[in-house]
Length: 260
Image (cartoon, rainbow, N blue to C red):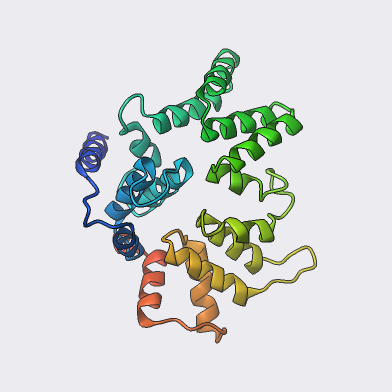
């Protein structure tokens, strides 16, 4: 336990010392991340946090911090958030939402009050989620729509999902429209076309194309990589370079993960 805490503290110290220099362009960081560099994901999270080379974006920061966790750069995504300076707007938003999850009524009312006074599109999105969760779907969705119009990527992504409980499929057309702004949409599109629809039909070729788009943006997960490799090795209509295959294999089996 002590060793784990020490390692966690060490990683957070390393994280805080990371600065994105002018040489560390976003494209360069994406390249490093695609080859499994967890620290590059942390720097990308910083880019989205501060708007360096990309649009400042709460959801983009969260996405890259999550990928950093998966690549082993941090123990938990939360470690990145808690490592942000006290008072940072994104840290505040995350902690507010985390507090809401506790479902303590007094705390929930306080969370809503703070979000109402925040004014940012991200705060409006979180307030919309809470409002929907409390049963007022119309008001909540209107808040999310307003936030999306103000450029909140999380809100844009939520609007592609007609049923947040997972009973209805996401809207592929809407996902395609926002994917260049919200790269995680490429991954969702891949899943959408790979898995059979209500009529039992799938389009694995199109799914693989979207999975590879997700890989280009360093957000492809293990399941997507496995599906691409399986499709390719079974004679599917996709062209992969040797480097593509190596990166996909790294996603399926990261270098620092040992198999028995």
